[in-house]
Length: 159
Image 1: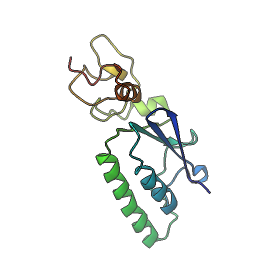
Image 2 (image 1 turned 120 degrees about the horizontal axis):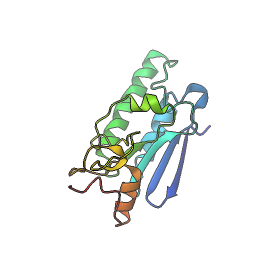
Image 3 (image 1 turned 90 degrees about the vertical axis):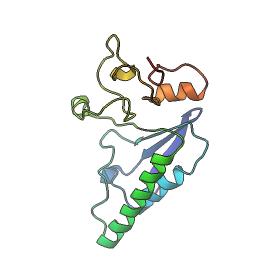
Image 4 (image 1 turned 180 degrees about the horizontal axis):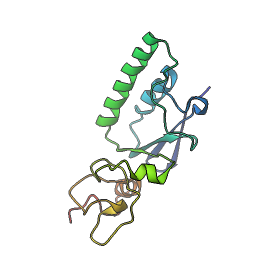
């Protein structure tokens, strides 16, 4: 069974969709190893990590695993997190679901790389974030445009 669907919906965009719906995408060894392998692809300009369905992004570590296996998978997840942090391509989480709950997370933009659920107001940055600052792209569309040497939404340009 393939627990990770991968495709390239646009040039330079690597989309990774976790596919363990019966476990709400809880991460086991197979999924952790598939994600690690996917992050070895050097040709992506941006990586979009999501789910194959809207039910859940991920329930986290699969708690049905025996203790020694949970420890091993946890170690793989730390390795995966390190790869994400050091990846030359920005990693964007595509999370479907409750818009109000997503808005209540209160992440600081654009430093997190997460697009807001707010509407853009005059003087605000892209995706409803704070005013434009010297920062990397805050959304997939901007990063894809920049990778193609085209102007993006402007969140990475100083005001």
